[in-house]
Length: 289
Length: 189
Image (cartoon, rainbow over all chains, first blue to last red; front, side):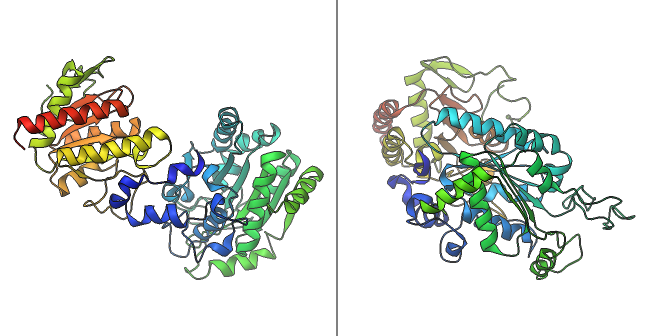
C-alpha cells in the first residue's frame, strides 16, 4: 500500500484542496527520490508539515521539520507521540501518527512495531517515538527503559526542552540544576538526568545527545538512528529544543541558545554499538546514508 | 423519538440510547425502522433528489486510490453525484484544521455542522469515511442540523445517520445508481 494512500483518485482531483494535491505531487516521498531524503529538500519541496500551532520561533517546530525531512521512508513510518507541546503539531503532519497516553509512548510503539512486522512481513515499517522530556524521562521512564531492555526495534527521539512547558513551567528531571521556572521558584535541587547515558547502559545501539542548532546534524542522526533500529535494535536521540517562552527569550533567540548549549549541557555525546557501526558502514555502501 | 432536525435530535441520548441499532445483514435502517435495502435506497435517492443542496461527502477510503475497489468506487460515486445532481465536498483526512476550515470546500469530522450550515445542506451522503470518524460526524450533524444524513457504509452501518445502508461495495453502488435513476424518472427530474 505505502504511498498509494496518498494517491488521489482522478475522479476527485477537481474537489480536493490544492494542499492535498501538492502533497501527492510534490512531497519528498522516498519512492520519488533517487537519493536519500534530507533537509536540503526542505526549501524547495512540499513539506509533510505544512503549518503548525506552536509559538513563533519555537525551536521544537524547526526540529520536527528536520526530523520529518530525514525519515528514510515517511510513507511507511508510524510516529508515536505523547502529550506535550509536540502533540499540538502531530495532528498537522501528513503521516500516520498515534497519540499515546502520557508516558506510555514506548510501550505503544513496541506493540505497533510488533504488529506491523506480523501484518506486513515483506515491508520495512519504521516506528518512531517523538515525545518531550516529561513523557520520556519523568513519567514514562519505566516504559522508555523497558523498551530498551526488550530490544524493541524502535527509534526514540526526546524533544528535551528541560521543562514542562505547556502546563506553565514546572521543572522536569531533565531541567538543569539550579534552574528557576515560574512554577519552580526555588530552583532545581538535583542534576539533569543523563538520559543518553541511561539509554546506552539500557541497551540502545545508538544514543546521542545534541541540540537542534545544526539541521544537517539532526537529520543525519535521525536517519542513522532509524536505519539501526530497523535491523539491530533500539536507538535514542536526546535533542535540545529550548522553550524560549519559559526561559525568557525572544522568538529569534532560540538558535543562539542552542548554539550556546552545544558547548555546555549538550556537548556532543554519541554511542554506537559495534554491530550498529558495522551496519551503518553497510548502509553507506548501499547509498542509504 | 427519532425525527429530523435539531429540535428533536439531541446528542444525548444518541440513537443507540433510543433503541436504534445498526441493521442486520441485508437490511437497512431508515430513521428507527429496519427496512429492505431497496426500500432504503429508494428513500435515500428521493431525499437526495428533493432536498436542497444535496451533497456527497466522500472520505479517505474512496478519495485515495489505495486499492482496486477504491478506484472502482470513485468512478461510481462520481456517477452517483451526477445522477443525484449532488455537490461533492471531500473529507480528505481527519487532521484538525486550524485556524479554521474553508467550509465552502471541505468538511472536518470534528466540526461537520459548520460545513452543513455554511452550505445550507439539507441532505448528505457520507461514504468512504472510516467508521469511528463517521460516528463522530454523524452524531454532531444529527444534533446540530436539520440535514438528512445517509451513511453508506462498507461495514455494518451507522445508527446515527437518518438512513444507513450497510455492506456497500461497488456492485451495491451500481444497484443504488440504477435505483436513483428510476426514482429520478418517477419524480420527473
